[in-house]
Each structure stands twice: as structure tokens, then as C-alpha cells.
Length: 194
Image 1: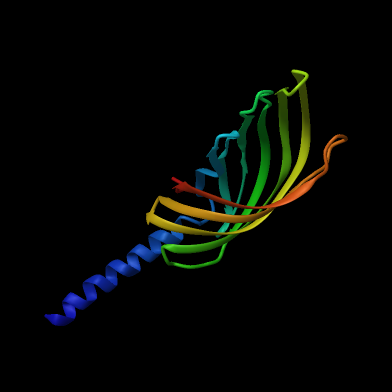
Image 2: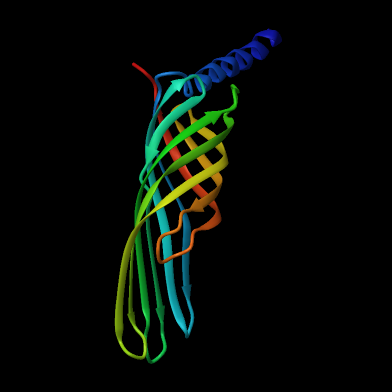
């Protein structure tokens, strides 16, 4: 009788592992939303807010290998609270195709690597200053990301994830390119092939 009680949890654990592995099999579609770079700062001299939301969609083209695209949307606003009251607003929208590989595992804990390359449209507007000038600029920049991530599957179809990525931004005629280290948090929904 005692052996029966031990076999039941073992059987359910093996079944759950098979279900989790099925999430990253060929034909599974994936939808996700992540965010990062959220900042809110307020002092007697300045106000600052920034944030980025990144919806994405993809499909597994082979077991543990997915391709897709993300559409990052970013917004930032900075206001200097002095007499001249300079305000800087920046909006960005991009299209970044991505490639993601999950290390094979039957655990709820999954590690993956991701590479994305694409373009980001950026619009900036600066108002105020001593002369009260208005400056506007827009550009399209090259962007590439390479990162390492972790997914925790809270259900067989939903995973919470974090991605630590190194980002390279291309230069424009008026601005220098740059690099950054980003941490994004989000979730993904896995829709198995019917």
C-alpha cells in the first residue's frame, strides 16, 4: 500500500514533465509581453518618467528553437523644474525579429538564449530653455540584442520570464550609437499545435 502512494506522485511528476517539454516543441505558437526600463523620479529640480513595453509573437520551428518578432514601444519624459522649464519627450517604436533557443529540459525552470536584430524609429522633442526654443528630431536606428533568460512555467501554457540582454544601438548623423545592459520581465503564453 505504501508503494502505491509513492508511485502516484512519481507518475504525476513524469506526466507534468512531458507536458512541459511539449511547450517548446515544433509547431507551438507563443505570445508574450515584457517590459523594462521603468523609472519614475521626482525631486525639487526635476521630474522623470520612462518605460518600455515589448509585445511579441513567434512559433517553434524545431524542438526548443523559436523565431518571431517583437514590437518594442518606449516612452520617456524629462522636465526640469527651474524657471526655464526645459521639457524633453522621447517616443520609440521598433520591429525586432528574434531567434530563441531553450536548453532541453523537462523542468518548470527553463534557460534560454535570445538574439534579435532590427530597426527602431525614435522621435524626440525638446521645449523650453532660456530662449523658449522648440527642437524636434526623428530617426531610425539599427538595434541588436543578445541575451540570456530564464522562464518559470507557472502552468503548462504560461511562463514567467526574465531576460538580461546586451543591446547595441546604431548611430545616426546627429547622435552616437551606444550600448546598454537591459533587464526585462514578462510572461509568455504557449499555444500548442492543434
